[in-house]
Length: 73
Image (tube, helix red, strand yellow):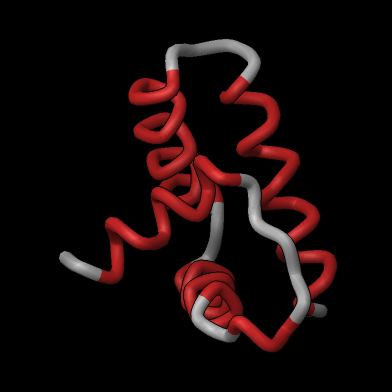
């Protein structure tokens, strides 16, 4: 899948949960959504994109928090 589209979709998910829950609950909800509804390959690609600072793609802060936490697990 195109990296730009993947980031756009992930940011939309983060925006939705950021507007409906407290930050800690929103982060958990984002993580659960990605695990339940995204294929492993999509999650892996998102993780790789988040580790490339030169990509110029902007991640929602809560999404970045989730991805950083997953990297350390």
